Image (cartoon, rainbow, N blue to C red; front, top):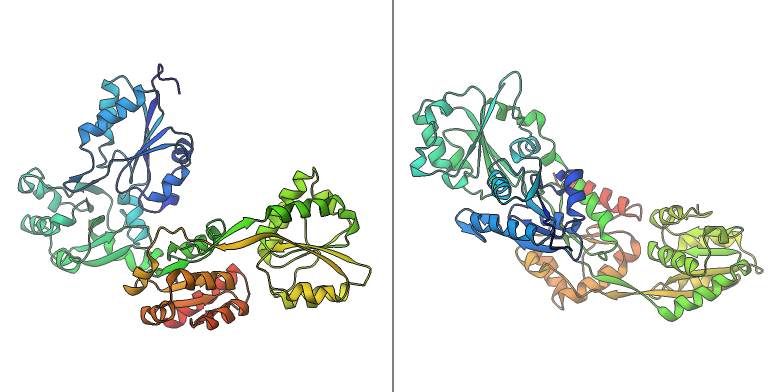
Length: 508
């Protein structure tokens, strides 16, 4: 970085809660910045877009508790830019909607620092929408006012008579601490105590909670809610039952523990969150290539024409096979003439990304189904290459070896992942987990090991349900003394999600 040339500061709105609300422009800037300076209300998931070597500085503010006072934040932004750094000042919502982005922009201008404001989706719009409350509607509100809930001098700085006389929608941000004073002031200044009102906490996230009432009782009804929350007052609140969509999703309000490896968890996490659930990453396994076996695989690829069949049983196997293929200066064309078999839709999908459509995909994604599908196609003159996990069941190898020669190469092993960011036993003890997902017998075994000898008793007491992807995983869970509350009918991630969804619906 050239410190002789000043950097630039980008005041970026991160949106309200849901990390997918970040704009394309915001993501682009985050992905290439030198430093990100972020607030308390920013979803931590957004920081993953920043480069690994990016400096991360937290300056969050909560009510009177400031990690860094505003003047010092202004000075920090100026200093970082003068050091030649491109800085993303990441804020929740929109920087200019009670986010002090305007103050920071003025400070940067006075210091001669180039800056840009990147709008974000404010909770005033997006948060209310996710609660099923439109900020305007031509039948009941043609205008709206957004007011700070931080009240000074006993709220004398606000014109309560004007606010109370509004015919549109009133939204108070950061007002939970003063909700009684807000509602009382509006009523005292002439607003109808029966005016519809609502409080929305952590809008657009799986932790969203919406309480509906009237101006005279909303403070009492929402007393259990804490910040961040917004208060909305007006007839538009009455449209919630017609327009709510987010908190009607089948997994809304449910917390899931996902035990897959970090590298593979994203698809399951995405599907759970799409249905409204909250996820906790608790990886129990990690994948490690076996170097000596990878060298064996490369030698086999050197004589790939000697094989009639290739069997790939996992996404990990596909990735490592094509890595070895590339190291041998070959590509998918080397597989011409081979019959390619894949276990599972995910494995088949991974192959297709490399330009290979498998010839055989068993209807059920277990070893027995693979043997049943492939055995009729084989003869003693065939030869099979099967790169797979060191932890795989011996059944497939033993069954197919009775028909023809099989070169099984154990190119990776599944090890226990001991690194974790979440205290899952504590969540279980606090009854804060609804479902635990298991996508293999190995995830089940290592989950039990990580939780400890009291795993079965803790699970029973917690009330959390175990969701299994298939019979082999269920068999392992039972051996460990863990319940099998749900088993997928189709042994895929989609099948697992559908089975849990069915359980949620039946529970209601």
